[in-house]
Length: 134
Image (cartoon, rainbow, N blue to C red):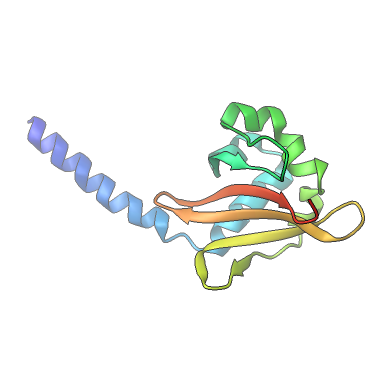
């Protein structure tokens, strides 16, 4: 009986992981931006890989609890992500099909705040925030 349970578990895992990997950039982006625009911190955290890299000199966001606490720092301090994400389009990194960025304007109107995303073993995740002026 234990062997049957193990085999079933392995089969379920084998079939569920590829389905997650095949999620398109557009599908993931729609989920992520909808969660940010709605202020759904729990959904955003579930779509984030930790530790979340931050701009130069700012400590990384180490886990879900830290993201919930620092949510405004990530999505409001350097750029207004809610406003930006409403119209922003993902930009696939040249030669890197497993990565994309979304650029947002800072207070001066310069698109220098970069939200980064990567596709890993369990699908797409938000992985970092950078300000290329810093």
